[in-house]
Length: 280
Ligand code: MN
Ligand code: MN
Image (tube, rainbow, N blue to C red; front, side, top):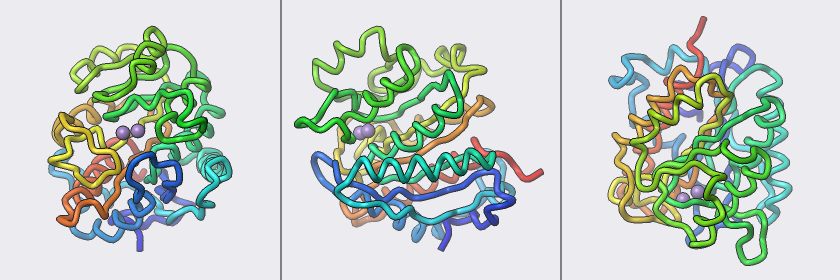
């Protein structure tokens, strides 16, 4: 079963949706591996039409390639598989659109995009800075993923929004290296000036949202963005040179009401309409 409205054949698709159901490095509560399948199953509960953008997802040729088979317990091999798949999608001149999984999966798709597009910049929505150099000795973790991204992209290429958790060490290390707005994304408009013309990767860790709206995540953090704030921030990126994006860290089993998965489905619909190419 494909995500609603994403039934274009691969050949004619302008964007390829795929799941990366991996959560082996999760530090607190695992379960993000169930994110992609939950979103597909629940996506029939929303319309393909967006009243926000006055457009229908059915007018956008998106192919849902299903979930990658990833080796649990081997983060490095899982990232290699994600990178290989995203590279193939980019080689075929299509946009990779990934559903996590824990946030580490971003590193695989980002590597593929950075190899193809020099000067790539990362726009990152999250409650957590994810800038640790290691987590209990491990370099590959959802708590280190943006530090690994910085090693690829370099200073001044990462823009963080919604951050409200991190160690003192992460915050001090990142000064002058990573652009950041704490708690929200009201400065995104100003950041857009330096983002215009640059190739972009957008990553949304769903715990950027307030746990009252999205409790179904592994590391909930109070004081988050509202759905409408996040949607507004994402819409302000429309028209920029977006090469790939992902939505991560939905952990559906922590929310028996289902509202987290429903929110994630709606957000993904809006991102697909906002960022992918319409049928010619
Ligand atoms: Mn994260
Ligand atoms: Mn997070």
